[in-house]
Amino acid sequence: MPLPTLIRPARPEDLTEIGHLLALAFDEPVTRWLVPDPARRPVVMPRFFAAVAGDALATGTVDLLCDAHNGYPFAAAVWFDHTRPTGTGLAPGHEPDDERWERIFGAELDRWEIMDGAMARAHHPGPHWYLMCVGVRPQLQGQGLGSRLLTHRHTRLTSDTYLEATTPDSRRLYTRLGYATLGELPLPAGPTMWPMLRPDDVPVEVDVDVDLSLPARRPVPTRVW
Ligand SMILES: CC(C)(COP(=O)(O)OP(=O)(O)OC[C@H]1O[C@@H](n2cnc3c(N)ncnc32)[C@H](O)[C@@H]1OP(=O)(O)O)[C@@H](O)C(=O)NCCC(=O)NCCS
Image (cartoon, rainbow, N blue to C red; front, side):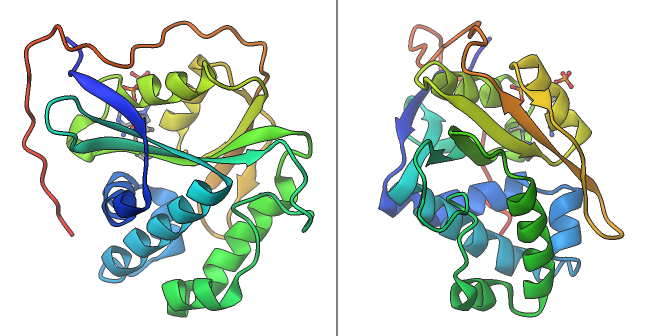
């Protein structure tokens, strides 16, 4: 039985919560490669995700899937509009801002630069919307919320969409949603990412935004960090 949820665009006042949500969701090999010290990850990753989500509010959109009853965010998807040239030749989300990234990453800045450079070089050249990241709170993963959130955006876009899958599991989900793998992006002595493209003519199968007819089922969300 699906959770009663609604999807809304994020606002600036949501950014701190989005940073925490995505940092909790992204407990996976690429994040562990990016910030190897587990004690540093809870410091670095919420600030990083809040920063990219803030960028997306300016040049794209951040979709939030929330508890329909109390508005608590369960999942977030950070999208950049790359249907128009940026002027820098780089995809939105990959524009350099050394001081800001240095402040956020500190000792791990070189790792971010390696990863960001690899993603930027492989980035799909044509017009598209770029899914920089999507995450569901850990205790709610595998219940269809991520699919619902992505389908919501797919139904509203009339361009190709592009992303980098960071795990074999998420790659399988994206394949199911119509994305094709373009290649491999191995990180030095680390995990592999997969650039993926979804042509805009792939049919969308479902779009369930809100289902208020169902009884509330309230998970108890916890913030670990
Ligand atoms: C990837 C993610 C957004 C998918 O959302 P979701 O609500 O868990 O996924 P759904 O229930 O809609 O679909 C399930 C599918 O998602 C994929 N998936 C990826 N990571 C998963 C996870 N941690 N738990 C469950 N499913 C996951 C699987 O393909 C799964 O299908 P399966 O039943 O064949 O294994 C979510 O699992 C998540 O936040 N994962 C951690 C962060 C991450 O990896 N983000 C994507 C990086 S590109």
